[in-house]
Amino acid sequence: MTFTVSEPKKESLRIPRKVEHLWSQKYPQKHAHYSLEQFFRFDNQTGAIADWNECRNILVTEDFIIGLIEGLEEEVGSASTYVMYQIGKEWGYRDAKFFQQWFEKEYKYDKKLYEINLIYVLEAWWWPFTSQGWGNWDVDLSEQKNGFMFVNIFDSAVARTLGDVGKPVCHIYAGLMAGFFSSLVKKELDCIEIQCYSMGETYCKFLLGKKDRIDAATFWQNEGATARDIEKRLHNGEYLG
Image (cartoon, rainbow, N blue to C red; front, side):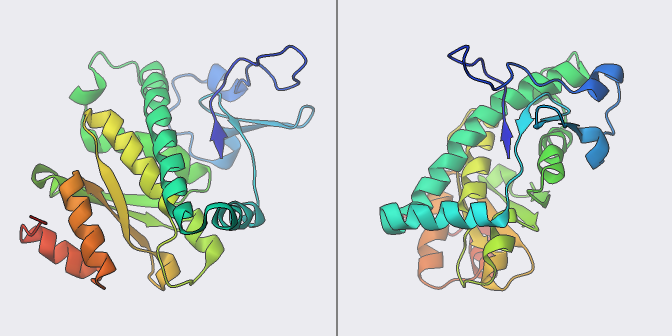
């Protein structure tokens, strides 16, 4: 779990104003910093953990994830899925701004972000999430021109923790992708998980796109459609009227 650096409101707070990554300062041009030892800096004296982009990180157990989800369910019932989605979406909006800052700082391209190869940009965005334990991913942009795309998440932290419960559980991931991609393309997008490890599948699959596509997929899913059924209908151009 990652937090961007912010100034404390009161001097009495003991949270450091800025957590620096000494390795990134020593090797600013090094981009292949994928290992645990290189991406994170563990400060044993203060207990702070900084990543390559100088953000504070915290380590949480599976009990934290279970407690968060069960706590929300106890407080707001079935609306907990919507709350988790909105949490993820706000996270995505904020992370998109932060990503653009560190991407430009690290790679120093003369081009604007939207002028760079999209797959390259997306891989740069997600690999820190993989290092932080959120899982690997795969993006399918083949239907982008038709207003939707698919994202596969392997080893989701949420689904792995909850196990086989027979329903999609990665609502924070769906929100994260909706918020990030909406900010990236400057258009409002929605996202829904149509396949989940917690449903007995081997990986999680998300549908990201325009509202009418997501509304259609949500309706079909509620009617019992599988991920493959939804994909087939979308490929055939079926949407809700």
